[in-house]
Length: 117
Image (cartoon, rainbow, N blue to C red; front, side, top):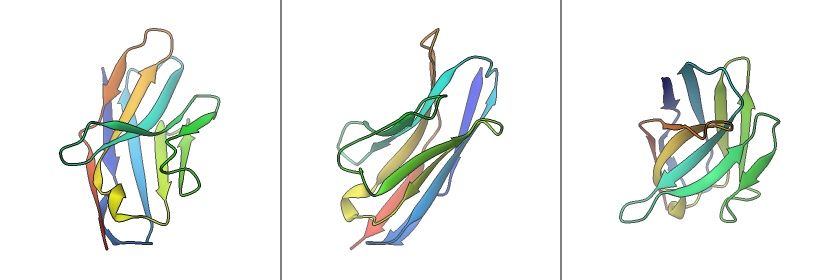
């Protein structure tokens, strides 16, 4: 089993910044991708950013140039630096880990981000 624990969410004014962290623990023995998703009230969960074990990244168009995903493999931790936040970034942000070979995926419980205008 794999456990993911997110932290760093909160309330911030538009234009501000937040950094989310997600620490993974458990049986992490194979190559994996880690990412962040978000779900706003009344909307479906959507991809925000993903990073591979080789540090390749992919971002949703809505966050390109504002958000940066990174990972520390030694700590099994992924980060999401969010700058120039907008009210439309308000959502619960979920951490995801997916093993490349098996396809097994795990989710954190989420951390809320609220951006006030």
